[in-house]
Image (cartoon, rainbow, N blue to C red; front, side, top):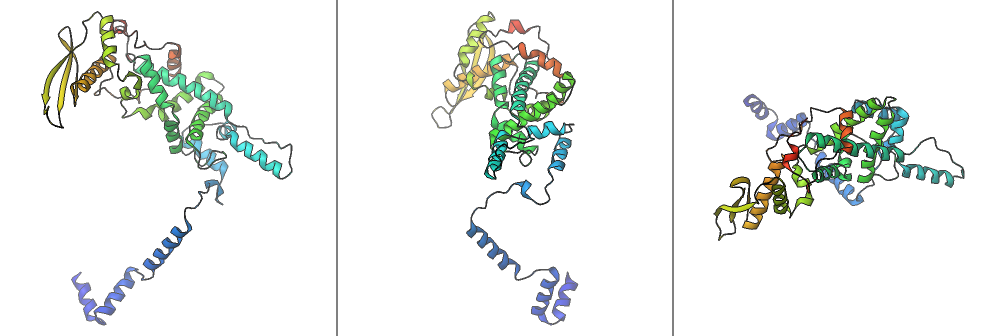
Length: 348
């Protein structure tokens, strides 16, 4: 660095040296003004319409379809995969275009994915509920249904669909596609896997693996109890009914300790006892909230869904046959839940 400065001062003066140094580094004086002018013109034009990726010159639909299947490590039948990615709205638009140019009896070789969506949604419902019943045998059926409904929402399925690259290869009238369209695309892809194998068990195993890897794994880091909204406000009554069916004493809330009761940062700890045994503990800004949290904690202990529970073993996938067998065998409902009926349950 010292040698460079000496050369600068010993040459044609400091000013000329700085200009030469700027030229050597590739800094051009016209770059900043040009970029500012381009930004001003772009802001003046306003928001531009989003163009489809398929509008680009180098777009190759066949190559994109092939690459999509390889990204998922699945061997799709090309015709079924194209059908799964073709929505009815796209065919309706194409038919209208043919009528505009004078083709009244237009014929399209493509098929829409309506049937695949229905079949895929039905299979996903059976598989998700069966998987949760196997992994969470103590969780009431109402909780299983609540977790299933969360996974089958358009928001979750659209999140999965967009991250596996369906946004640019699906065929629909709207762009960008809505959440419902993206969610239906995932269902149709599952339906395509079910029809892609002649062996029914192999097809179910393949489709089940896709549902497990893409959809069920969305539960990672989520509190299953928070997804069960229907339990809110009835925790203490539900706990009392369960303890009564188990032949235990009614829940007795007791104040354990309090901190800063006369301040805005008041904190209370309430414990719930049954037959002089602590069954739950909760905290809150007042006694009522702390009592409700304690009842929820007691239920979590009974259902084996406490906050420090082990995460679902996503690396252990039960067979699709075993999972689908549970579609007609729901867990015990919360109104009939009793720990005495769950003693012989063996977790997967």
